[in-house]
Image 1 (cartoon, rainbow, N blue to C red):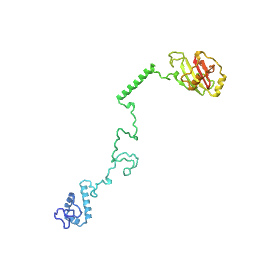
Image 2: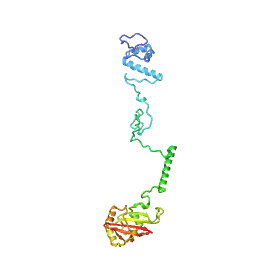
Image 3: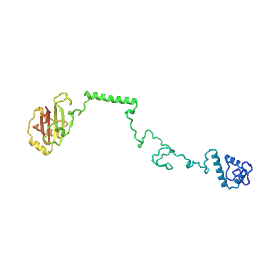
Image 4: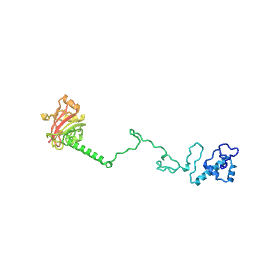
Length: 304
């Protein structure tokens, strides 16, 4: 390594280079270190090979930087971006979703802090894998939102009360009497059934009380279409007694009768029979008929 304080170039050294045999130009810091050496040290360095001079120069630079309180400059081949040594890299702080131990590296469950965050989707798209966001409870809403909800609920209740409470709107089937029923057991609680029908279609209406509602009516009329099995129907027909009804007790086909029953009643004259086998605790007057050509009996009974 040549003495930088001596302007003369050693014989055989390439022109334009004063690196003292290390193959490159010395930096200002390296030159300052060479100038601080004693003549005996310089003489010993000149006797070294080029590789030994490079190692000694690198060690001297690291020692000077440590003495000055600076981190040693990264070294490496020219043209490459220097990287921080693995031991000097700061470990990322944060939760470990994978629940792994304290091993080196990121691990499968540890998020990468250097990884770019995924951009949010446009407003027109929705991530199907995103967690479902529940609507806030009523207590968590703003004051104006609570007022709007309360006003809407009150308005709906008030309108429904006006429409249905004053009979402005009539819904078919709202009253008990307008409902078409098919519950045979419920029918048997009101009248007597000599044999259990296999199918029933019946209706209960207020009777002879103009304007009476279900809540206020005291007299009722039951009209029932009962279909029996072949065996039960044969027994009922054999035990039935003919009884001509009064004009007021004649039964006409209703619109809610089964289609086959309505067709049979129009095709042939029905056979009126004694309705007493079907009387119940309250229903002890009325009429009954056998629909000719079917296993069906139609009754119309009124309460006391």
